[in-house]
Amino acid sequence: RSAPRRCNRAPVPAWRAENGAVTESEPTFDQVQFVPKSVGFIVKVSRELLEDSVNINVALPAVFAAAMALTLDGAGLVGTGTGNQPTGIANTADILTVDMGTNGAAITSYAPLLDALEQLQTANAAAPTTAVMSPRTSRAISGLTDSTGQPLRRPDAIAQLPLVSNTQIGVTDTHGTANMDFAI
Image (cartoon, rainbow, N blue to C red):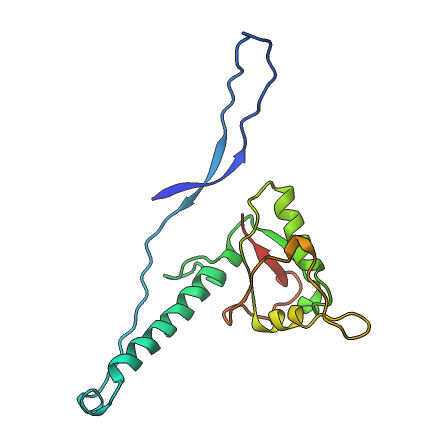
């Protein structure tokens, strides 16, 4: 299966005189190939555990759901696309990136988020709905302070943007891959 991914050539509007002919223009779209993927696991549990535990019928589904959520998050965010794993956002071709310098560089301001927002706006993309980052990056951004140690208020452009941390996003990339990735 495939579906339109994004318009790589938009239709070109043309001015016309009143009652004049309308110029024809056709957009073209990139395609994303949808390939079904499957993920699962088997867990052996003894009959004794099932019979003797007070809340195993609640605990096991919770553990299974948490493990599956982490696996799906990892695939969606940084999946390699090799084997049977889906390709995640970070490994998708033609995404926009903000260079974070050698070894990812330390977050010292809101500039990387503002740079990402600028790239999205320049590409006429929809406004972002969430920023997903590693817990370390989230902590660094949440801990930004001014020269007197007072917390820095987020700039208006990103003040309402939810910042979500996820352990599936690494912090050990080297220059060349130490980018803040985002897709439109």
